[in-house]
Length: 107
Image (cartoon, rainbow, N blue to C red):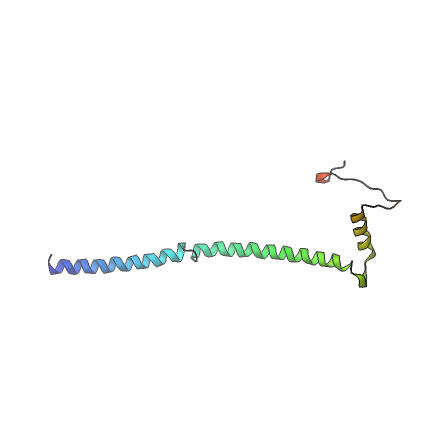
């Protein structure tokens, strides 16, 4: 091999190596576990988790308001009556009970 051929091979090898290194980093920037494509999926998971959090916080606030009516220091008579009837399966003498089956259909 002549000296000129060796120089060309050396220059080509350096170029190929640089392109390979750049390609490696570009690939992992896009496709890696922390890449741009994964970033979109992570943002979607965050949005779903935030929506679930908002739903659960609203449910918690509703339940806390309901429980507040059953506390001893400020007892809500309607809430107490509702819970007692539900738990004891009782109804008043002048009340009409309509039984519903699954799906809200009458029996």
